[in-house]
Structures are given as structure tokens and as C-alpha cells.
Amino acid sequence: MPMPAHARVPLAAALIIAGVTGAGAAAFAYTAGWLSPGRLTPNKILDALDPNPALGHRRNHAKGICFAGTFEANGNGAEISRAPMLAAGTYPALGRFNLGTPDPDAADATVRVRGLSLQITSPDGAVWRAAMIDPPFFPVSTPEGFYELQKASKSKDPGAMGALALRHPEVTPFFAWASTAPYTTSYAQNRFNSLDAFIATDTAGTTRAVRWSYVPQAAATPVGAQALAALGPDHLETEIAARVAAAPQRWTLEFTLAAPGDPTNDPSKAWPAGRRTIAAGTLVVRATQPERDGPCRDINFDPTLLPDGLAVSDDPIPAARSAAYARSYDLRAAEAQDYPRHLNTGSAAR
Image 1 (cartoon, rainbow, N blue to C red):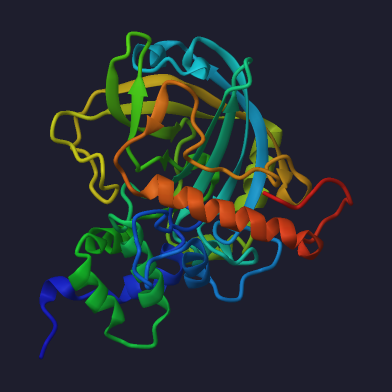
Image 2: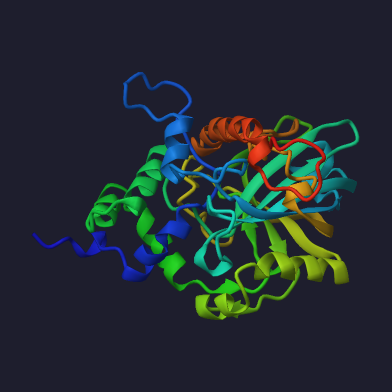
């Protein structure tokens, strides 16, 4: 029987799905409430990402470069959240630019999704960690959907992706984005989005559902995959290192506030255009360093590690990510001797 038209997956999307499925966070797993023998676990998700991972590396978003800088809050974010690093001031920030793949040696043009992992620290020691990606919405709505996406993308069954689209029709818009959206020639030109909804609480106790993005201040240079490939397999890391060495690079932190009825439990659904936004400050990247000996290498960018004034919502993805991130961290720590280094300092756990 012919497959319904809405269930067909574009060939171009199918060809790049191996890179696409690294989107988002490192991996997802159900953490509670699933008593059946077939329930998802962190190990199952990590194995679905790559059953033969590069030892000592992150299990997803394995290719990356560290950066250090500051977050310059303008105070506007204090309207919606009492988080200390949203009060006007300058706060230390560090993080990593990365690609959504478990392969640390992947060529840049073979990976569709790019990420920004970030830690901002306030003077009282409070920490805000975030892991964001550049698509405008997530491919699926649940951890189960993400797991099925991994399995389908690696299946030898030619109908696997079509069957996935029948079970999870929300993947079709994501495939369309992945097939048609241009690449850029620099991490500095990418907008990075939380996609997940969070709850912001102000000093009066008022709560609001929000998503956030880091919007680049650099102008974008859109290119196709072939043009990006011609720049070299590691162009993004060498380019951002040279760019930051020449001048600090900046992104504006922009909060988007949900309106009544906007979904907070489904990151595959973008909120309508026109929602109120608040520009809360500027991330300034002042230095980069290869991850093998950089400050980001030992950090687990768990997106549920939030300061007072920010909290998870009913979105199921962040808690699931947290469980898988923790397992990935433990595995990396046990494989410290397998991680390539230039200097014999520090630990390999992240």
C-alpha cells in the first residue's frame, strides 16, 4: 500500500538525518514512572545515539571548542526573574560551541545542528547552566520520540523514517527545516535557542512561562552544505578561534514570554510570532581554547541546574536530559585515560 503523502520523508532529510538526530541535548531518558521492562533508561538512549562511542568524549555534541567571557546583564530580565545574574551587572561566563554529533571527528558540513552550552555564575555562587541549539523547534515532543528517532535514523529498513513520521508527525516540519535552512560560516552567526519552556519567578512571586535565545550580533553569511564543506572539515572551530582573537563576539539574551494557551510541554511547537520579548543582556565571548585542555571540558551542562528565579516547566525533556547527561558524565570520568590531551592536567570528567 502506498505511504500517505504526509508520512513521506524528503530524501534530502533522510540523507542528513544522522547529523540532525544529534540535535538538542546529549541524550534523553525517562527518569521515573515507567515500570514496564521496556522503559527508557539513560543507557538505552546513549546506546541509540552511538553503540560504539568515542571513549572519553561526550556521548553527543562531542565535537566542540571551549570559550570564556562575561554576561553583561542590563537589568531588564529582573522584571520577570529574581535570578541573581539577571540583575544589572557583569558575570563570568564559560561554555562551548559544539556540533550535534557523537563523533568528535565529524566534518562540520555533515552535521546539521549546532549547539551553545553555557554557564553563568553570580557573585554568591549561584549557577545557571544551559544547553541550546540552533533549530527553531525540536524534532519531537517527548523523550520517547527522540529515542525512536535515533533508532529509525540508524535502521536499515527503508520504511523506518516514514513509519516514524506516522507515529510522530511533528518530525515533518523539522525535516523540512533541516533540508532547506542555510548553514552559516561561523558559530558567531548562529542564533541558539532553549526550545524547552522554563518558569521565571520575580521578586513578588509572580511566575511566567518563558523560552530564551542567544541572538547573534554578527551578520550571518548563509551558505549551502557544499560551500561549507569546501572551507574544511574543522572550519567552525578555527574560524571562531580566529574571530574571537581579533575581537570579542556578542549575542543578545532574549526572553520570549508565553501567552495563554502557548504549549509549555512540547518543544516541537514554536510559539507564534509576535510574543513579547525582553532583551536581558549580552553574552560576550572573549577567548577560546581547544576542549581537550579547556575550562568547559570538566562541566556537565545540565539544563536543569538553574538559579533561584528560574525553574523547569512541565516540559518532559529537561529532566530526561539531566538523567542522560549524568550518565554520560560518569562514563567520561571512567574513560579519562582515553581522552586525547596536549597537556597532562586536570580530569577528563565532564
